[in-house]
Image (tube, rainbow, N blue to C red):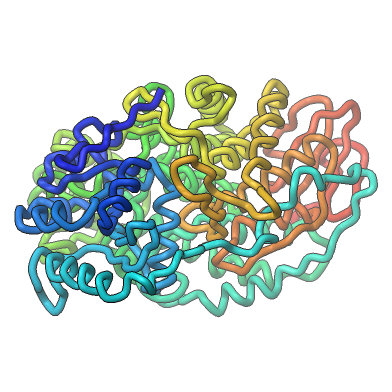
Amino acid sequence: MSTRTVFDPTRNTLDAASSPYLQSHADNPVHWQEWSADACAYALEHSRILLVSVGYSTCHWCHVMAREAFSDPGIASYLNEHFVCIKVDREERPDIDSYMMNFMLATRGQGGWPLNVFLSPRQEPFFAMTYAPVEDRDGLPGFLSILRRVIGFYRDNATKVEPFDPAGEADAGPVSISELHADLNDRTLGSFNIGPALDSLQKSFDATTVGFGNGPRFPAHSTLLWLLYSRDALAHLQSDSTGEAAAIDRIAIRLLDVMQQRGLHDHLGGGFFRYCVDEAWTVPHFEKMLYDQALLLWVYAVAARLYGRDDYARTAHRIAACLERDFLKDGLFVSAHDADTGHREGETYLWSREEIRTVLSADEWEAFSEAYELPEEGNFDGRIHLLRSDRYEASERVQQAERALHMARQTRTQPFVDEKHITHWNALAGIGLAYAGRYLQHPAYEQRARSIADLIARRHTTDNDLVHAVIAGSTSRTGFLDDYASFGLLLTVLEETEPLYSELRRRIVKGIAAFQLDGQWYGSLQPDFRPVPAERFDQPVPSGLSMADMAFARAAVLDRKLHDEGRSGPPLYEDFRNLSALLRAGLWHIVEGPDPPDWRALPAASIFVRAHESRHCFAGACRTGPPDTILPLR
């Protein structure tokens, strides 16, 4: 069972919290509390402004603010006198994080963590900010100055503060499970036109810096999945789609190449960092998130299948190895690795040329210095974050050098690991592993995916409810839409080859529908916080709505039904939803038969359904017989 700290406004109570992030603030002189009804009631009774500070344990700037402002005695004294201070782990409470982040985006136009939001005693947010230094610096007001301004603003404008309602459109969610209809025999191809969405992506894509828009470069998982599966569909349509296919290749291949070649990729450890701070994909924030490994494993595995490139397959295998080596604990995957080591960002991962020379033999140095950019002046605070050069080749000598450097790096102090097991992110990892097993012909990956599903079913359920996470052996609160939707989606993938998952899949997919009330979809219905409307944005992970839509569509196929064509969303914003639109438009291959197929004989976008007779359906047409009767690749 989960545990909760006891509210006490006279001290910092986070020493009893289970969250590693909250524990990291237990030594602050600020009288931090966990979110609770008692804390909110105290603020209302004493007319105190609420400071709700949201972050996560592997966030660099969260650490900086903890060491600076939240450890400063003067700031702590002011906060304790005038505010009720609440710390929130965004990984433990995505509902509170979503509500506060939506307020910041609505009022400031951008967001980030640490996310510090000030609310009236009635829980109405009125000001949000991210990091601030202790004192005024470089044109930025210091945190104490901000706190005084917040007090003054609220004193003068208390009656003008209004509730914030982030509710989206009522029809923004997936088609309800109750609307599923039509046998596959009656299925006809709905209208589908990839052109407008692809045109929009091309206009947003900067071919010079290789990314969408300006600013930091994040891995566009959902966009890449939509592009790759659209490319697969175009290859099997009887139409002149060579122009669209070439346009997809220009975007997808450039993105896949730059992500695996430059600073986003941990070239020695095999995983990926969260994002790069510059448009040249050189300098990352060094935290490693489970969801990035999960989604990029899926992306590179399907890319390897579509393009037949060994380097994409190698990248996918190395992500899987990173998951097994660095994220696996007690059968499930931990949530994240810290950006910092010893309060220095990236310290574990950085090198000097001399350090590299010391580790490598002369032959290895010669090969490695040809394959990697190793500037004398460094590329990160005078040291080197490894980037592959244009001449990179995965020769035996280069790979031997990479292994030697990785072994040497493993002897260094390693970043902190947040060991919470999050249902949602583990389900995403299971999906990535299941598809990687099929696309890369590596059955052990799919077996790991089944093990993940079995452990979630056993450890992450209580009273037949799915829970959001297990932290330090204790189950957290009941699950969110993201948890149900991602786990339901994983089960639809595993059920294709293992029918024993069908009963659990039906129960979990049915549970998704509980998040729809009076026509509105909610991401959270927690009893100690307001209902939070479901997110629609498919970055950095697919939204709960998009995953629910895909889970519903796939469940209908497995039950030999399909629902209507449904709705798509704007490119870049709802690309995972657009991925499910491909399925709803009939552009995934539905292969029926008595035995699981040889996945090598099928297109990437295929779903297997057990049936007495063999049949294959695509683009509104069904044929009897084995999969080799499908339309040939162009």
